[in-house]
Length: 242
Ligand code: FPP
Image 1 (tube, rainbow, N blue to C red):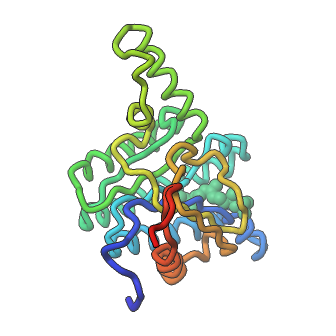
Image 2: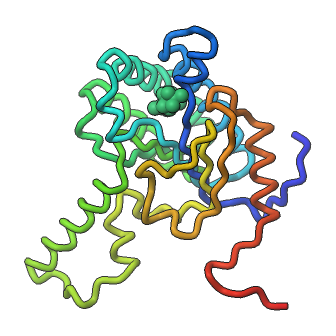
Image 3: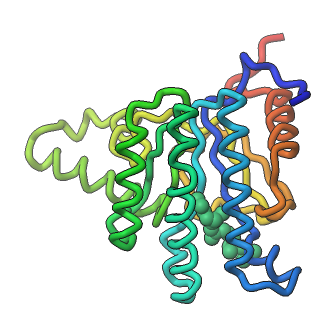
């Protein structure tokens, strides 16, 4: 792979809102599920590319809390694709030392999906090179509500002093605890919204919107975005010294 990337300045954590599967299918007069199937192939490619480039964490928005409102047939299609993905990728994750993790209200997923997820998470638990973080039945507001409840209950029991709540304590009670905040957030399909994704964690992330529909998103464009990221200057609210 020829690219201009500086291996020392790779983002540690990349998060992606994978959008546009439905439109990809519609343009080809295909069923929406066909778009998700092609989208699952793009997931395989991007996971391999991220690992090859030594990105330490990749978070993919695979199913939102709002997605439960989609037709039952589409939901079951997505769940089936997820199970197929877990089956076909298990060995690749093991061989490439990738740990699978999930964020979201996993208890709302069908039992078979939960069992498949748990099995692959157990098989990859000690892998250290990269974490593949699948956001499933995920919503950032629900995550924040869960965090507030945990901290409020702990304060009620006297385990913590409400006056001593810090940003670090908040981060420690989110689903992403232990994973650094995303340096880079990408959304495909031209929509310029955050759609309830990682609201706390993206406070200082660089954001890229691309018109490419997710099934067409591949290694070359991912590398181009990473090159563009490396050319941006991150100031975290401070000024640059001249
Ligand atoms: C958005 O497209 C995508 C999703 C709702 C789900 C993402 C799922 C996949 C990429 C496939 C399966 C995932 C894994 C991890 C194997 P959309 O349906 O909202 O597209 P539209 O906005 O064009 O209708």
